[in-house]
Length: 162
Image 1 (cartoon, one colour):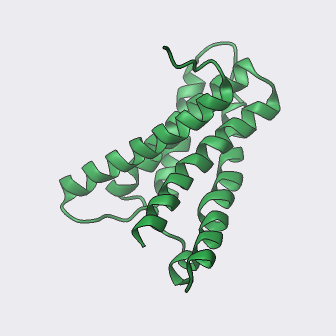
Image 2 (cartoon, rainbow, N blue to C red):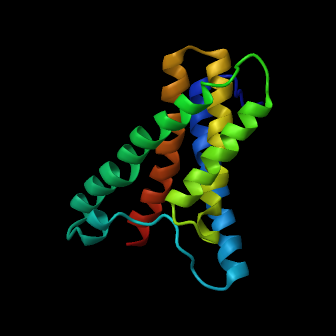
């Protein structure tokens, strides 16, 4: 039995899992090479300071999953939708590279945030692909879902660990 991945919603969820794995692995490799835990994304202060599990989960869902996905992702999609959608071009790769550099800077500008930059590059390319094949709404919603899945996995691991 073959897993059908032509469903864009399934693609978005699987991409979110892949983004988590890429960012985690690159951060682990960077921290191993450097020898210390480097700056990068972490748990929002509201989540870490919450006293009970329900508050921690609610704050984590809001500050760690929903807001980053809803605020960061549309900007990325808007940028990649500005380049030609009929074929891959140098402008597309420049845009993806620029977005990755910006993400790297905004997420700590350290070896530990290289995973975030690489994952955003993948998400940008996927957003461009969805914008080519689907309508504008899907071009924004699917990468946002991927980003929420990516951050949701991180929240779930934090909730389990804590």
